[in-house]
Length: 97
Ligand code: SF4
Image 1: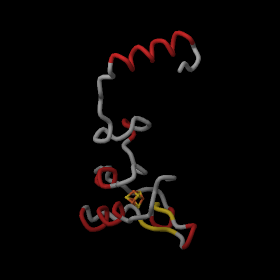
Image 2: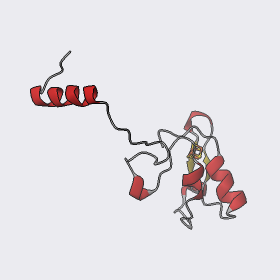
Image 3: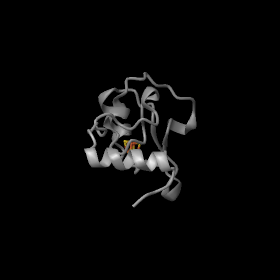
């Protein structure tokens, strides 16, 4: 939860939209974090609403862990010059200018 900015969107969607209340704020001040109420076991329906509404990517679905958010990732075709430089860089094993 290093990326969490404590915006509360996940708490709100879980409580008000889904009506589950599986997550909430815990502690105060710098120790505030998002977790199940009273840090009990997670009683979640795994609807994915919190994951889809999280603006920072602090909550991600397990299959997309460490892959970035698909809406943020865009494939681009590198230019010929860049491909050449990359090839040269990889062949030499060191950085070239
Ligand atoms: S929506 Fe994401 S950033 Fe906002 S409080 Fe929940 S986990 Fe933190």
